Amino acid sequence: MIITVAGNKKEYKDGLTVAELIEAEKIDNPLYVTVSVNEEFVEGGTFDKAVLKDGDNVEFLYFMGGGC
Image (cartoon, rainbow, N blue to C red):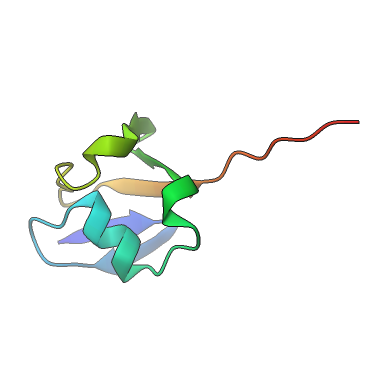
């Protein structure tokens, strides 16, 4: 299947989960990443159950705190 990861089209096996994608993409600090699939957030505790489909668009987001 072909999915878009951070703006790049990539080929992966069918049935890939978000957790497997995080590992395959070697995401820094996977415990702190937020994932969106087709512009909808995936709940953190469900990454191992969230199965990706052909044509999905996946983004990895990190929310930073801070201030003045």
